[in-house]
Length: 128
Image (tube, helix red, strand yellow):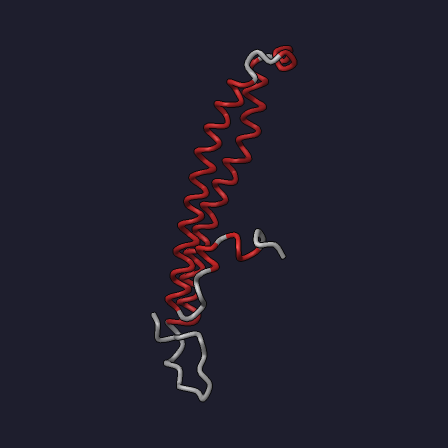
Protein backbone atom coordinates (compact mmCIF):
# COMPACT_ATOMS: atom_id res chain seq x y z
CA UNK A 1 0.00 0.00 0.00
CA UNK A 2 1.06 3.53 -0.71
CA UNK A 3 1.68 6.18 1.95
CA UNK A 4 -1.13 8.16 0.32
CA UNK A 5 -3.82 5.66 1.29
CA UNK A 6 -5.55 4.93 4.54
CA UNK A 7 -4.24 6.18 7.85
CA UNK A 8 -1.14 7.83 6.42
CA UNK A 9 -3.21 10.54 4.74
CA UNK A 10 -4.46 12.21 7.93
CA UNK A 11 -1.60 12.27 10.41
CA UNK A 12 -3.60 14.36 12.90
CA UNK A 13 -5.94 11.41 13.43
CA UNK A 14 -3.65 8.46 12.79
CA UNK A 15 -1.16 9.74 15.36
CA UNK A 16 -3.67 9.42 18.20
CA UNK A 17 -3.08 6.06 19.95
CA UNK A 18 -6.18 4.26 21.26
CA UNK A 19 -5.07 4.20 24.89
CA UNK A 20 -8.18 5.29 26.78
CA UNK A 21 -11.25 7.50 26.85
CA UNK A 22 -9.09 10.60 26.49
CA UNK A 23 -7.91 9.26 23.13
CA UNK A 24 -11.51 8.84 21.97
CA UNK A 25 -12.27 12.40 23.05
CA UNK A 26 -9.19 13.73 21.29
CA UNK A 27 -9.96 11.72 18.14
CA UNK A 28 -13.52 13.07 18.01
CA UNK A 29 -12.37 16.65 18.64
CA UNK A 30 -9.58 16.59 16.03
CA UNK A 31 -11.86 14.89 13.50
CA UNK A 32 -14.60 17.45 14.09
CA UNK A 33 -12.14 20.31 13.65
CA UNK A 34 -10.82 18.79 10.42
CA UNK A 35 -14.38 18.42 9.10
CA UNK A 36 -15.19 22.02 9.97
CA UNK A 37 -12.03 23.28 8.27
CA UNK A 38 -12.62 21.18 5.18
CA UNK A 39 -16.26 22.24 4.97
CA UNK A 40 -15.34 25.91 5.24
CA UNK A 41 -12.67 25.47 2.56
CA UNK A 42 -15.20 23.83 0.23
CA UNK A 43 -17.67 26.63 0.88
CA UNK A 44 -15.14 29.40 0.19
CA UNK A 45 -13.77 27.47 -2.79
CA UNK A 46 -17.22 27.18 -4.32
CA UNK A 47 -17.73 30.96 -4.19
CA UNK A 48 -14.31 31.58 -5.73
CA UNK A 49 -14.84 28.95 -8.42
CA UNK A 50 -18.20 30.42 -9.40
CA UNK A 51 -16.60 33.84 -9.94
CA UNK A 52 -13.74 32.30 -11.93
CA UNK A 53 -16.06 30.28 -14.16
CA UNK A 54 -18.27 33.27 -14.93
CA UNK A 55 -15.26 35.47 -15.66
CA UNK A 56 -13.34 32.83 -17.64
CA UNK A 57 -16.12 31.90 -20.02
CA UNK A 58 -17.45 35.40 -20.57
CA UNK A 59 -17.25 35.91 -24.33
CA UNK A 60 -16.34 32.26 -25.04
CA UNK A 61 -17.23 31.66 -28.72
CA UNK A 62 -19.16 28.42 -28.19
CA UNK A 63 -20.89 29.43 -24.97
CA UNK A 64 -21.62 32.91 -26.38
CA UNK A 65 -24.04 31.24 -28.79
CA UNK A 66 -25.92 29.84 -25.80
CA UNK A 67 -25.83 33.13 -23.89
CA UNK A 68 -24.48 34.39 -20.58
CA UNK A 69 -27.36 33.05 -18.46
CA UNK A 70 -26.40 29.56 -19.61
CA UNK A 71 -22.84 30.07 -18.36
CA UNK A 72 -24.13 31.16 -14.96
CA UNK A 73 -26.49 28.18 -14.84
CA UNK A 74 -23.68 25.77 -15.70
CA UNK A 75 -21.39 27.36 -13.11
CA UNK A 76 -24.14 27.06 -10.46
CA UNK A 77 -24.51 23.37 -11.26
CA UNK A 78 -20.79 22.81 -10.83
CA UNK A 79 -20.39 24.73 -7.56
CA UNK A 80 -23.57 23.17 -6.18
CA UNK A 81 -21.62 19.92 -5.84
CA UNK A 82 -18.86 21.67 -3.92
CA UNK A 83 -21.42 23.34 -1.63
CA UNK A 84 -22.99 19.93 -1.05
CA UNK A 85 -19.58 18.56 -0.09
CA UNK A 86 -19.26 21.44 2.40
CA UNK A 87 -22.62 20.54 3.94
CA UNK A 88 -21.62 16.89 4.18
CA UNK A 89 -18.46 17.89 6.04
CA UNK A 90 -20.59 19.81 8.54
CA UNK A 91 -22.68 16.66 8.96
CA UNK A 92 -19.54 14.57 9.48
CA UNK A 93 -18.47 16.96 12.24
CA UNK A 94 -21.84 16.55 13.93
CA UNK A 95 -21.56 12.77 13.68
CA UNK A 96 -18.17 12.88 15.38
CA UNK A 97 -19.72 14.74 18.31
CA UNK A 98 -22.45 12.09 18.45
CA UNK A 99 -19.79 9.36 18.20
CA UNK A 100 -18.09 10.74 21.30
CA UNK A 101 -21.36 11.07 23.21
CA UNK A 102 -22.33 7.50 22.29
CA UNK A 103 -18.95 6.18 23.42
CA UNK A 104 -19.34 7.89 26.79
CA UNK A 105 -22.91 6.61 27.14
CA UNK A 106 -22.09 3.01 26.19
CA UNK A 107 -18.76 2.56 27.94
CA UNK A 108 -17.41 5.29 30.20
CA UNK A 109 -20.51 6.31 32.14
CA UNK A 110 -21.99 2.81 32.48
CA UNK A 111 -19.17 0.37 33.17
CA UNK A 112 -18.03 -0.23 36.74
CA UNK A 113 -14.40 0.29 37.61
CA UNK A 114 -12.36 -2.44 35.91
CA UNK A 115 -10.63 -4.95 38.16
CA UNK A 116 -6.91 -5.42 37.57
CA UNK A 117 -6.02 -8.43 35.46
CA UNK A 118 -2.85 -10.46 35.15
CA UNK A 119 -2.16 -9.07 31.69
CA UNK A 120 -1.98 -5.33 31.17
CA UNK A 121 -4.26 -3.79 28.55
CA UNK A 122 -2.98 -0.85 26.50
CA UNK A 123 -6.39 0.84 26.79
CA UNK A 124 -6.39 2.76 30.09
CA UNK A 125 -9.95 3.24 31.37
CA UNK A 126 -8.76 5.53 34.17
CA UNK A 127 -7.38 8.04 31.66
CA UNK A 128 -10.53 10.16 31.38
